[in-house]
Image 1: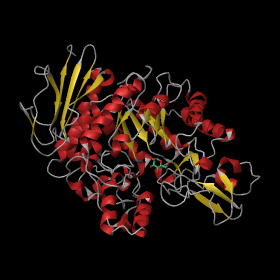
Image 2 (image 1 turned 180 degrees about the vertical axis):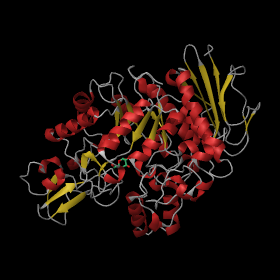
Image 3 (image 1 turned 135 degrees about the horizontal axis):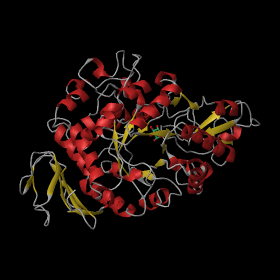
Length: 544
Ligand code: GLC
């Protein structure tokens, strides 16, 4: 168990993300819930994780699955009660697992009492909690677009004003320029710290300093001033782990977010590597084959750029991304090998790894008829592309590859009905491959993806080189192999990953011949060749 009284303990930690709606239902209503999570804590303890990033469990009309909060200090009833939440925090802590809550500070739901009050009139004390501009009904203040499609402005006839929403219409943005808003948010955070929560994941935190009149959404001029105030006023002195989701961050800016002095956040959660299979200049929906050299260069830039100067999160999957084994691995014949290879490639690097529920058993993407997708972003994307004249097959190819719903199918616990997720009717389709891919099967097979993750997590705790080692990318131009070393004064680690389903020649780099094999996805490495999706880690250093 990690000693969490140590400053920076989270640098040796591995976190696990739970998307509560799809994790485990306990009462048969088809929706995952907090008692369901509690019932799976032993499983998570067995995996070896140190903390859970819990996607939002707050009261919410669920327009964006809980990222639209109507009461920050209440639990959405289908998820359970505040007493359940308190029990989760306590029971997790007993197992050495910290609860890291998702914190949506950029916007609320339009059903939050603040917004309801704000609608009552320009003089209402809550009116200035949100971002309003005067204007005529048919002329929005400008042409800014919402992330989930359509204009970012919504007109309220009774007020003769437009409000700004970066995401859905039902997610009005909070006005961070108003100090009363900031104070209210800090008070809410203290409420949760008082409940024993040990950290927060800050949703789209790069949006809070926006200046809509200048069409600035991310990286506004006051962004870091706000984050420093937030850190001082709400987080300081508690040893909390704070994770800033920032789609817009580059390496330089990430150094500000995760400055080792601790004046902002513990770590940044950025996405640059996620675009290695997107058409340059396009969005995440614009598909391209994985450009491995581009991915490697990107990783190298971040590894070197933050070393000693900041801290990064390591992840392939989350609730907004497709399943990595379907994306950059092989979800068919080599599912197990490629899922392990992808895990090794990521977990050998510097940063704090995040495992998204189901990743540890190699869960895959899903394909549904368009009408069965639940995600607001997917539905809006599809409608807009079709309206723009894009052929149906092309739009659907993007949906299959990139829809957020790929990650949101219920967790596959067993081969029983509904994958053991619920005794009722699941809120969202269970991937039919659950009969083969499930936790019960994984636990029964010593060669499963689960045990590979378990071992990677344990290695991070035993060899300091995982936390501290300097990163060197080997053979940057290889289109098949991702290999790198990590080095401290005492230890050296070599990570070798074949990103293809073909055998490729691979001479071992000099100096590693007698290295200790820490982990591999084939029984033992062969000399001179990597087998399809093969990976291994060799280590040299003083005996552990
Ligand atoms: C973040 C969340 C995503 C949500 C959005 C708006 O990107 O991860 O799920 O839709 O913010 O809150």
